Length: 449
Ligand code: SF4
Ligand code: SF4
Image 1 (cartoon, protein in one colour):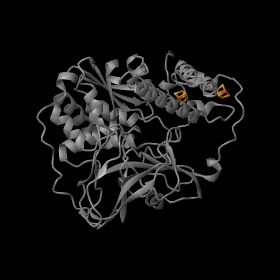
Image 2: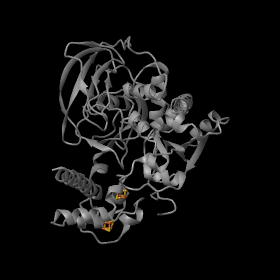
Image 3: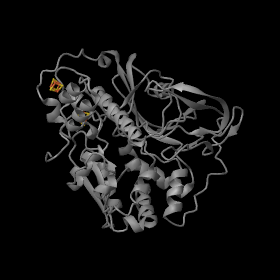
Image 4: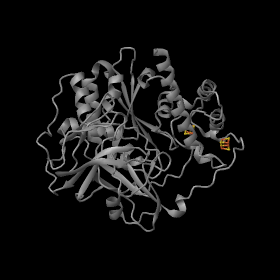
């Protein structure tokens, strides 16, 4: 294992670090997809023609890792229909025409919590998911830490925000250290049996000096909270990387995170959770950084979830025709097909790049330079992964792929970034991981027969 396992200096381009978030005017409509989390799609419980209010439950979770969806404007449900997603699949979305009043639902009130079980249930009902990108339901993550086989002594609050351009977590920390403090106290109170003696490490890169100062002042009298400063090197925010750089522990593939004695939560997820528990208002809006070479005035905007990307770009203005629009960061984000797509719970940024910046260079043959492995935080040789993917025999391919360690891949795209042959290495890893997942399922099914 390397000494510091994040090692790529990418330009920060944090142009909006000084931009206070501005709340947008209520959009005329919002589109709320049912797949804003990692599990099964949520199930709509409203019908076309229904009147809804802000914070009202409009779709119920379907299954363990699903998450509910709430109305983010008041108005009328005008359509429930499939929409395309960036992955190529479709998902059902609920379109609400706003009445412009932003009337809050009568159901919005702080949840009643008496113990750990009712705490987890409340976090589940608030629709809180990992806002750093993974969208894993937060209650399920906490629930894993209650496993008696695990002894969690460290809670890592992920405030690295290591992707270029994005400053939404940074601005949230400056505006709401109170919510971060409340979130920590909720965890200590209701998960006391599991986290009572844990140290809470707020892991933050050194390029956010003002936020570090605010956090140090906020937690000056709390000896169980440590502001853990990390080098400004990508990808500090990847959970395996953060675990190692903050605790020295190594994440092993195939094991749940709390088995390493640590729980990790994104700082904005923690703040949103506290807001919900304080007020009963679920995730209905978020800070979105809007930036990129095609954007006229980069800004941080507070927008209802479901607002179309085009509405945000109208506010910031465009100085050229965008050749590519990404939700999230340039390293790990997802390109979208249309400016009509909505922002979802994890949409911490909308980046619009001009046509010149959007052109991908043509890939050429691997020259075996080893740079992908050298810069990989978990030392994977993607050249080896690519070779293994050409093997015809499925069992042999699976064995070789497991040997490469590709299951440990954190999707950071460092390999892509440094490859002199411009090979699409992240895609190779995704294909390899998808193959291994399918292979494992087939093996399990075969064993059950
Ligand atoms: S293989 Fe590539 S995407 Fe995966 S962790 Fe390594 S550098 Fe990141
Ligand atoms: S960085 Fe690119 S060219 Fe170099 S070994 Fe890896 S895949 Fe091959």
